[in-house]
Length: 475
Image (tube, rainbow, N blue to C red; front, side, top):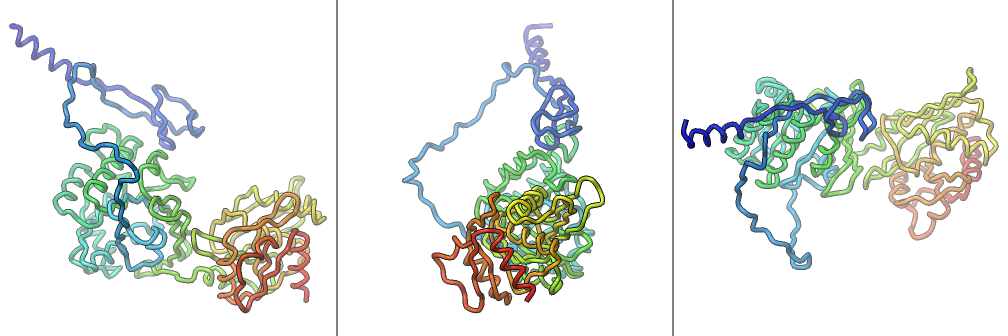
């Protein structure tokens, strides 16, 4: 064997790979060389999954060649900017959640429970864009093209600019995108797409991360907006590492009970608009229909004159929404009274009950408390404190508040009512729906003019607010 053959064999041996295993947390993406029962990063139990990784024997023998980038640092004052033209759909609710429409080159992640309507929503949006003479590529990794066609027939989709592809190989998907060069792409879902170079199974942390990274490159390079569907875990968060949510430009959650018709599209991250925007849809046989006045929907089944029921004007992004808060207070049958909450932070209920007991004198320590936000909405802002406190006191005393009252304000631990933001928009929404009186923090009375037809009453303490609310209900 001569020297050249020895060199060739040595080069082949250096190119050979060996496999090694690592353990990756499918909740946060933490990597470990050995299995552990509890992830040290996110503290979740039994979330580390074994994955096979191929690595080169010796990377120092491999010479990597490539072209140097021509980009140079620029002064921020010398950079020219222009307003991006957004692609608007025929759904104003969908456009508003995205911040005014679809931004070209953006990567948007939509998550939700199975069967909640994610595919239906994106197929309707695709059909509307196709009707506007924009080419749309809908890629389904979970359904065949015939199954997608059956859903399209039910939704009345007839545009010839909508292309459907059933594929899970990322290499083939990228080739089809580059050949067709569509104006809009939908990937349903990211957990079914796989990259051949990654040895782990589709849906694993490595596959989801690598596929999303490649799709992001395609979106930015070709200036194509790409929507990807993501599954959720049993806790309700997007399945896969948190890195997935950091990579995309916007994260939308499609929420709602499967046994109810209303669906909520909520934005939790948006690089091109405000976060926590909310759009309301109603699931019909022919698809999703927009609900343009969600406040009226959330209050349509409200019981008149019932103790423990109040209405709060909450801000969902830039939109004020009126929601009913219900409370039920009953004597406990156990040593430790129960505190349960649906739609709000469960820690907020015992806090407000402690304020009512200490500052108002209500003996609630031996009472079970159940608080619920009607309509399946989740509220997480402090402006709902006053409405929750009034509903708890109303149920405890069995005295209803006036049905024309709306309550807005944050409750402090000393019993004071603190100011909240955007009070003018909240009161304006209450006035539009026919409410006659708004009880708000006294500090919020200055700097704006209340609309006609509604009385605005400022209060300093929760005791003062409770006195006004329940006295009005007994008249």
